[in-house]
Image (cartoon, rainbow, N blue to C red; front, side):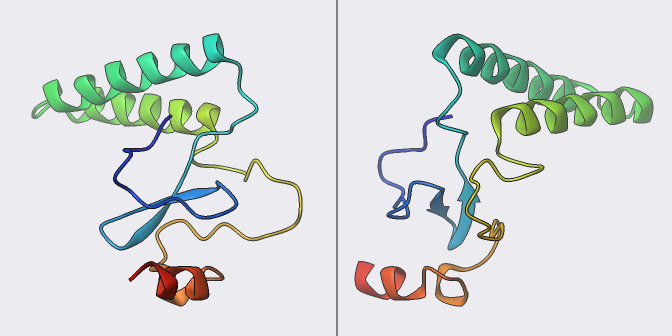
Amino acid sequence: MASHPDYPQTPDGRYFVAKNRLWRKTDPRLDAATEKHWVSELMAARRAVKTAADDTRAEQAARARVQAAKEALGERGPVWWDDGAPDETGTHPKNSSYADWWAAQS
């Protein structure tokens, strides 16, 4: 999933920064059709969460769909890179392996 162009992206292309947190980007190895399918499913699942209202079972099912789509996109679950670097999703960049890069962004 393409990140917003105004959000800084780490030099290795693994994360973008929003609200002072690192967020894992979509696996760049996905072909366009696969990515499009899962982005569509993610958006539909997010709409289902919103419309579930007070139906706990419907909300849980919709949230499970969101999780499955995010995993298929590589944004959650096992990391899509293979160099052994840990997942730093949700970490403030200054507290991550990207601290020097982040400091240089100011």
